Length: 458
Image (cartoon, rainbow, N blue to C red; front, top):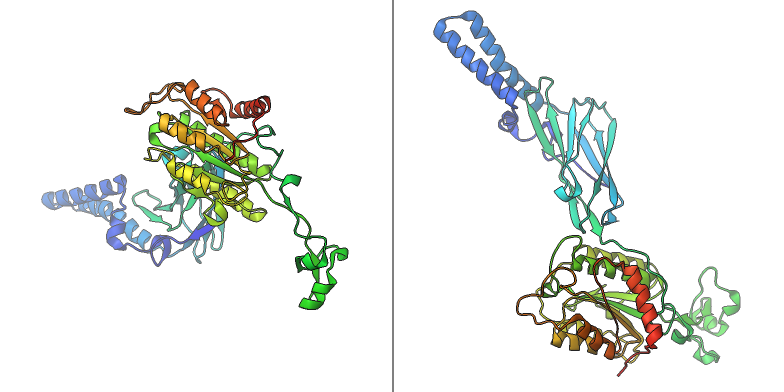
């Protein structure tokens, strides 16, 4: 929840001076003022006293309303709450607004308006009745976007008016919130793309508590630990209760590589090939995280999410949930890059760290989403397969999606690219429009079992 007060020391009724208040005259107020001045001038020329009084009344009424509205001394505070603040594309979010009267005077009629980008829908407006001192009013509205991105909501605006509708003053709050629209995801079937059914396994376990007492690596006692694991020699040495560590699983690693090169994709919009690749990458990230993998998101620019610590891979527990949110936030705003090749991504894959790509472990899973690949980039992508336990490529062809390759970008036929990737050990599938990613994911698992892919390590 965020809260703020309208700009100006005295709240909505203060600030800006009489000149700013005069600028708030409505069309009706200006008409009254002009008619009053004209009537007064005619009365002076014609010597009509009655007409002069009418003219003065017409001219003074809007000025009195300006002064009365300017001298209003009540103060209000506003807050906005998003529920939730991160939603998939095409899903609604609820925005709740609350106005509190923190002054000792009741308010008049208020018009509440919130600024929202046009992609989220029409600008919401609400009319609030008189708010008693210390009282509050709550209103809500819904927003929805079919386009991923980060959208600011606010600042909140209050429109004050007099009972005659001659003057309207607008005061803005200073705070705003951000709605993050992440790509759509779909549940994926549990297929085996590596030598393990999930990110944990006996083949990945590392024993930290060896047989001999001298080799034990103890840790401090935690509430709930089995007392049979207490290591008394270490307890005597450190002066606090110590227990033996149990075998801990080493999480297998997975990298989701997203090709964002502008020349690799043609077209834009929710139904474009690039948006399909972004949504499919998001679905892959969610799925492998649920399977217990340590995951990172990589783009052709070589940027890795989460950061470079630990090779850029997520950790377990709460840190894994935070890393998942960070990766989804990145996919919410990812756009086309101006890069021409995949060399930076290749270097990042090669430098993935121990237990993953490079560093001797070589047990990482690579899931890639490629656009148009020329001969050089196809060869580079094929070499990424080395030192991985499994590699799956989903290749999007501009011609299949109703577009054209970038000018000067010679692209081999789709079948040729798939064959070359397959010869290098990839499980390579074409991603045509109209096919659900869940079906392609299932085909990838079936194709791997049929071909008996085991990995092409160096």
